Amino acid sequence: MTNAKEFTPLNIAVLTISDTRDESTDTSGDLLKNCLQSDGHNFIEKVIVKDDIYQIRYALSRWIADANVQVVVTTGGTGFSGRDSTPEAVTPLFDQEIIGFGELFRQISYEQIGSSTVQSRCVAGIANKTAIFCLPGSNNACETGWTKILKEQLDSRHRPCNFVGQLI
Image 1 (cartoon, rainbow, N blue to C red):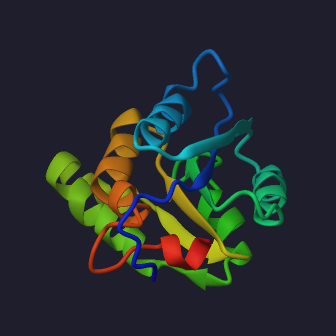
Image 2 (cartoon, rainbow, N blue to C red):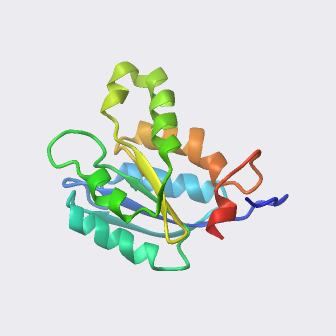
Image 3 (spheres, rainbow, N blue to C red):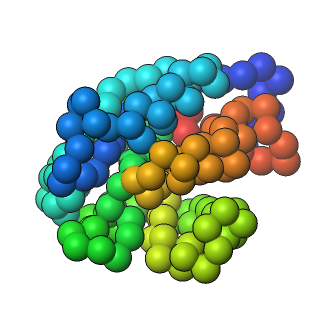
């Protein structure tokens, strides 16, 4: 854990996972990009891939191996419908799972969408000192995940603890 008194910006990439979205319709990916930049972090890259386990792993593996990327936030593919496969693609890449992320997201989400939150399969973990946070594909879910969890946990000034010291 870092004891920084000043904000330490992190290098963050965004991965949109969808069979239907492209650059013109990727509102959740754009929302995450805008959130991380407005909170002072460095935007590295945004990529859109199909909801395919191997395309997801390929994009993530490239960033996990890149020492310049400290965080990846994904959007999409965390439900139960159709081809949703984000948890299956991402979880094997983790060195450590951040179990509390999904638990806290569902707790917060319950206040917004009630029992439908049980269908959220948000996951997070750390792979090669890169934190990966997987959010649902809706703008509301991305905003909730960023403002209620990630904004604080990716801020070096947040007490009593945050992830920054493990990522730099």
